[in-house]
Length: 496
Image (cartoon, rainbow, N blue to C red; front, side, top):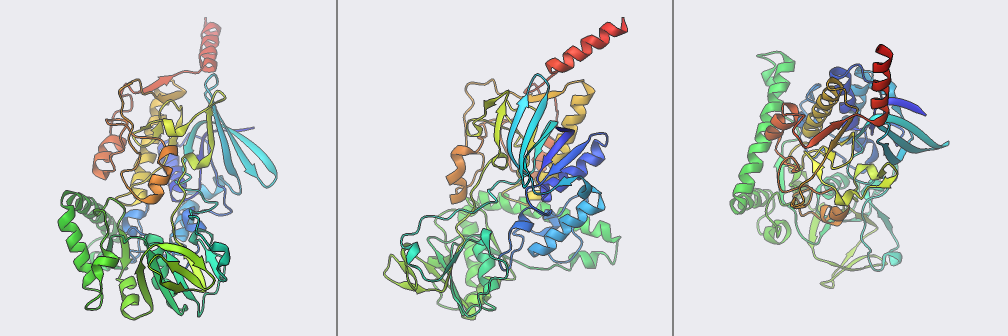
């Protein structure tokens, strides 16, 4: 069984970033990345549906140590995948990745301070050993997305596709398409499919909040005329970070007024007389769920031009030629796309145990949104819901490297966050009421009602906490394994 100081699970944007931080901040540590897929990229290698793109601006979704340097603010999936791949090659990270290995079980041995990581491969089961386990495997199941049970599904004569399982080279030319859903995936698919489809209909049970963002920005290019290009892109990145955080705070502070403003922006982009309230005014406040980006207003343009339409209703059943709605109307379709969400999971779906005892992650607390109560030497990456994922992934990486340095300095080989407060109130890990979050709430770790068990979702606060805050805070317990203690005693005896 191969041993590494650190094993990173996942070679997506988080895993590659973690490896780069580890190489720079703890260069003496050996590490290995285990990746279930055949290539790097994670999410950006998995999703292949038409128009796949970021729903965060690339100046902040890009790495802080290697800023995004093209004017495209909202980038397509292949471009983001190339960016991750190029980063891995640039820092030599690609030489430390094992592909086609899916981590299924993780067990920590406290006597040895060792994780045993069991992965499924094409050649059978494979085991690794490490002192520290770093889960960068995302937050949802890669195998399949979430699809509700639709009555009459077997009666429909056309194709039914979930975006997470989009067939390669699928031809939808001339097809009447119904996309079920109104989230980021649906908003991406619909304008992208109007180039070939006869017509695309967005079928939603209830609307989502949308905001329009320019697809490209020449601000960095203009700044480059007056300063070094690298500095120009870093300035734009910091401006974008500040803008995101300020807008989130303002919208949460004044939800009613913010909702009116967002709705008016939508109204301006649709024909006179369009029923904006019915199709674009949600029942919840802005940022109770994520806002959906509409680059250059492409969705609204498709509606104006008659290539796309919106139906707000509930589904009675699928029928031979489409979808019958509760209102009695039938939407005729040759293709139904179920953009109905993701299936969330913790720790990449791996079954966790300590000394052979199974750990129920749904009954644990998250420590600083980075580690899990009573689970030694294990970190996970979960980005921001109100800002770009990578902003937090970078901070988590810096925290983990600082933790490893602290462990080495005090001669500890175990670090375990311990909650010894019986009055700690359990709250959902994510402060969102999106369907995909609510469905998974019971099986995800919880956050507490006070620090350090809360996940503040605030970039500027977490700079102070994760990048500069105390490591030894009395909650994180440092210790030596029985094996390390025995080795120390043996060394002391030998020295006498």
